[in-house]
Image (cartoon, rainbow, N blue to C red; front, side):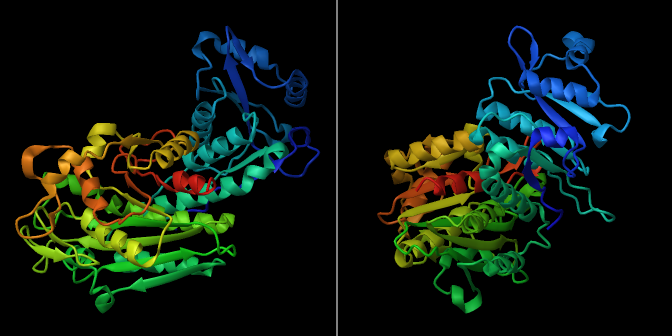
Length: 497
């Protein structure tokens, strides 16, 4: 992995600020509100203590900048400190709005970006309760993320401190941060390194965690996985892998959640070559779903959740070669369903279908969830800020939607339009896989309808994360490139079961 994951810890504010504790801080973040005037949103006694310690007047500092600082959410006023007062070099006044989880998340991300690639030790006084402390801490750490394959020393990583009052959320925050951070590392790793074999090797490393087991299939072990072979056998250099990662807590009666992740390590489009060619540049991130599924299992194990969780990583490279599948091929999926291939660039649903059918037949899941960067149609419909969620279980959808809003990975419940199912008919197989007939459009919907054919009667959710799994800009919590979307959403949802 690229860099050390940021450390977070709790401490007594007054003791740290006054210098009574040996633990040093270099930066101090103060919450600011603007309700008919900018105010420092801490108690008067703490404000006086800060001013006395650092020999400044916060009121005067705010007055100096006048209307240039409005105190809007995530806006930061930087106050440099002279001398060596307790080794704190900066005070940041950051807008927190209504102190909602969304506002505290934005403020946290702004602070994280402010100290990015430094050895800063930032003490924040922004949160008002444990929920806000969790989202604020996670956002700070994610905002400080960067990736580079440049030679030379790796960038430094800041650390973050928060009040002892919120120490109970530290473990969950650490797990959510590390899970998302590791997912981003996997997604950003170039495809010449992050092959199916390499990713399966990375998964094996987590087999050392208590109650986690790993199983990898390749070669003849994949003989029944018709979709995975059809896509992955296009690369003889980097052949496909099926990875099963299982977390079994001691409570044997716990519900079983199975996650199926699309793991296309690079997507050329195959024979149906992607055009224009520059759209391939981001296709190393086409394994984001598998990375998120893997790290969700790891996160569940690290939190010791009383929920059994299994991830199925469907790893393949969609290459262009003499062994590539062709439009008009008919493949037999796990379990026997036959599918006519129309467009080899719609490969994700082919590998997912095998995983879903395997889970239905062998794992008896209480919940079956697939997660994939599946369709451009989902991005067109929902932008890069929402994942498309498909399920017929209204209660489950509402819970995932609520969790997503809280944790910062939002999903939108999309319709499974049964009238569109006729577009999946085929003259030569059980189904065609792209639903091109009748020009219904709705490519994300018809892809979900195709996947539903392989889930049996399970409580199933399809998460099309083609939009939020990748950011085109380096802003907020997300770097340009892979965002790690899905780990926080699914981990937090598991805590509700």
